[in-house]
Image (cartoon, rainbow, N blue to C red; front, side, top):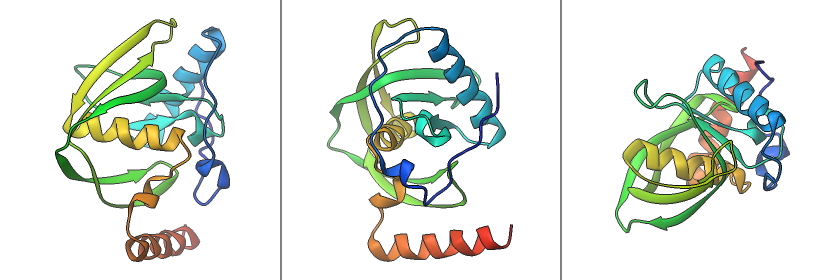
Length: 166
């Protein structure tokens, strides 16, 4: 297991749709393990393969100790609730800044596990937000694109200033 370098905003790879995973093999398991190590080191609660420069549809989440880390391969949102919630979001690719994003309160996703078995999961609250956030990333939509232009511009300026001072 390895901590991989994280692609930083505004790298254009963060706005490119990821490819469907077709090989459920040791390479995929190694990528998932590396994503987990990289996410923990960042630190973060969710990461995608594109965050480390690998354009594949793989997500790793670790939201609580009870469930432990979960890997989602080729996840797709199948259903969204009409109810919306605001949740503060950020990214391992843009550390140090965050803002509130409006998302569906509940979602149902389908995905494959690391063994290539089709799964389904319904989620709400933080887990639903994370599913939407990470699937957006896989589709090439970086989270700040969900903000108003004014909020996005302010956040980018803040991040640029922070990056210069690092």
